[in-house]
Length: 76
Image (cartoon, rainbow, N blue to C red; front, side, top):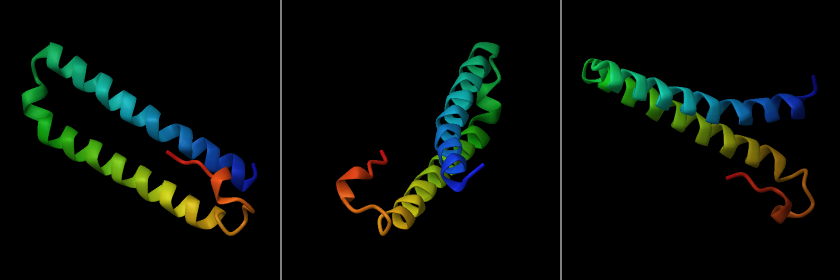
């Protein structure tokens, strides 16, 4: 696998992790035990969102010198 393929896979993994956490939260609410794990859930979600943002910023910083036109790089 080349570096670009790995970067793409990592970009796809973050939304999957966040979606999984949200589905787990919904199941915990239905099961009636979310109140016991709310703190851990919120910390985990914040950590994943932080590392996603950090990864995107680092990737953008590394790719900008390579790309001729800055408008071609669009990371949301």
